[in-house]
Amino acid sequence: MLSLQDFIDAHHVRAEIFAFDHPLPTVSLAAEAANVPASTIIKTLMLHDNHTRYVAVVLAGDQRLDVSKLQRHVGAKKLKFLGHDEVLHATGYPAGGTPPFGFAQPIATLVDQSVLENDFVLGGGGRPELLVKIAPAELVRVADAVVGDFAKGTADDSRQTAA
Image 1 (cartoon, rainbow, N blue to C red):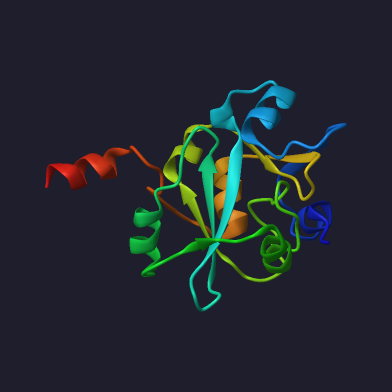
Image 2 (cartoon, one colour; image 1 turned 120 degrees about the horizontal axis):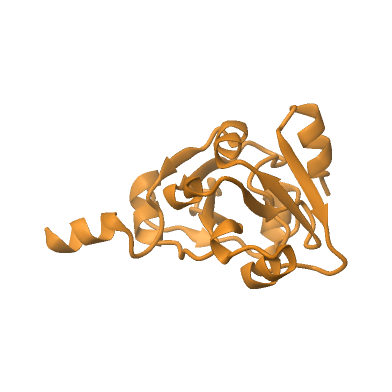
């Protein structure tokens, strides 16, 4: 298993890891422990197509992924969520603690535009009892991420239904 702190140090990432005395595998548990709204917590969702092309999608904790938007964006007919073992294999980190950057291999990373509405966000810190605090702009930079609309119920949806 990788150490996110090692990645942060080696790449001079402006981020801080916070440790808690219990696992925080869900948005609600992380928000409660950190005493922040769910919109400040980010979740890193790992998906793949049938050719094991991986994609990481970072969403605000109060958002839900619109898989059809994601599929159109990456040009895939079908994407599937990775299982726990697959997450560990692809990223080097366990599910429930997967950070939004610093993966074991290059993985295309997409950040939902709602994440950028925060001054800082808290996401998986590499293990279920850790959270990483980072500014959204720094997250986009270090992950070499593409920002877009990947959440359900956003403006892109209303344009589609009106057409």
